[in-house]
Image (tube, rainbow over all chains, first blue to last red; front, side):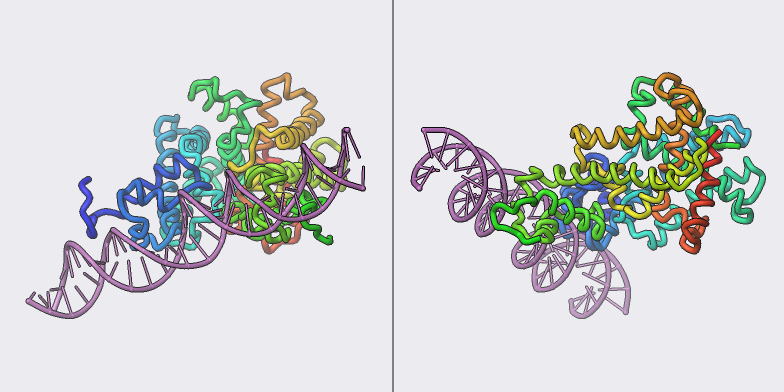
Length: 201
Length: 201
DNA sequence: CCCTTTATCTAGTCACTGTCAAGATTGTGA
DNA sequence: TCACAATCTTGACAGTGACTAGATAAAGGG
């Protein structure tokens, strides 16, 4: 894209793309707004007009992350069998796959204090992700978790299991006991599915 | 403690205490070595002699965190019934309780890239925590996870479940669906135990 | 006991950071 | 055409981590 001076045209989008690359390469803890501006070929003051500050930019990026995250789960579900149990496991595998492919973005979304969780777009995207989990669970268990506390505990158990696997995977904690790096993705997914199934009753 | 100049006497310990307070109050992302030095009443260059750099200090602190972490699980187990299932659930509740009481330390231990995971003290402490989980699982399942892959998957499932609950709790994600903040600790632990039990077969 | 070495700190510097503000430039609308 | 708003550049400031020079104190050997 040819950069215009002073009226770039679509700097917000370019900054988000640059931010995603910066996040991917340096991680959330070494993320630098000035480095993002450099990647976008603008001055360090330019992002302020579009995102107010570094938290604003990361909040927007995290919201985008949630959309990608839900999309990853849909991709896995599209390839899985259509029975509710297979769909539930597939969503879990999509959850984990997203985390493994985007560890820094996953950290931004779930572990970082940088995003503004009161931000409308962020909370809409995060709630959509949670609602999907609830919908998938309703399909499997046949009970509405928003109305039945035991059903909600089942959702919590499933979410904790899948989130725990994702978090420990990207922290590198499952490598020594499970040896995932020596496996194909299909083999890894099969092992993970067996672990996830330990919580689906 | 009366501070001596130039030969403090026990500055390493004081810096670790100051670091824990700084971490607790500002979180891992806003953690500042200079702020730690101020709390310890020394110049910003003093920590370098004892901990080389900020990562060195945080690595030492994370190792201490793991010891407290294991201690928290033992405390819960000391109060629980002695059958293996109660002990396993109690260890899980101790895991979660530690995270809730020390969210920033928990993040440092599990999610941060700052600690040097090749550091001998760090990996010894982290491995001890993992070994405890494996030992508790062996007591319950009666099979050695280091020798039986299915048993190791049971450990992974249990760990993921408990770690997921802890991580989502400190991220504030379980509040809306579960309403833990309105409960006593005993009520919360009872609900969490029911969720953990969904994965213990 | 004195001197040298080592340990342990202070103080300063540098480059990088986020934020803020002043001002320059460009587009829009009346 | 002009005023205003949008959008950027530039500079400044305070704080940061890391590094270095040098000051201070303790230890050890002769």
